[in-house]
Image (tube, rainbow, N blue to C red; front, side, top):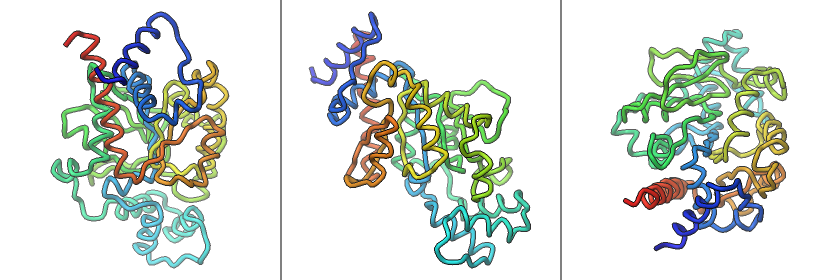
Length: 319
């Protein structure tokens, strides 16, 4: 029997009798086999969560953050001054739209989706979307039921919907809870891919961003902290430069159950660069780094975690 399966079964046996810290050594997070086994265990226990950022957009066939900002500017006929951040350019674009946030959101939506191409056939051709969907689909081996997204798009929800899953998009707070298989919390708002969908207020410009950053009374911050602090989180497509996210991670680092029990890290983040300049920013906030040769390798990694959890489930049930 494969070594990783033996390891996972041993860990599961220990966990049934005691909440044992078995990832206290930072080297455990550098051991690919051991880390995948640990993540599979957390998935089977309902303790794995996804935190998604703009870096996954290209994997979904959407523009990245720089491309989106440029496309919105072209749509508005706006020429930003050189050297401005995307958020500051956003303020200029919002002003160009007469500070009409609904009109501005509609402009961003056009730039985000372009020509609609979101049939089932289109979406199943996106390996990253397939892998994220696999994690979120209900299964005896466990699944991810809550996802925190910093993105405006709802393509993951649409993909799950094609498979007959009830996926709820939450773009504003407070909200009415509903019976859903998967709930995706869009921290910066949502722009539905369906033309008839209802958009929520979005956080795109610097002034919009300033309304939420670091504010403990912000409902969204409390939601994000609750999700992050209740799970082993996989951070995908996030650079770590977002000051709001860094503030949330800093708070989570001191109260997360894994940190309290002495684990070396409480979350992991995917990066495609060994010399990533943000690596230490994540490490000091309790998040280890999984370095892949390219983001094209992330789907295989995620599906392997699913398969390990399923194999352990079969072995436990004697199947």
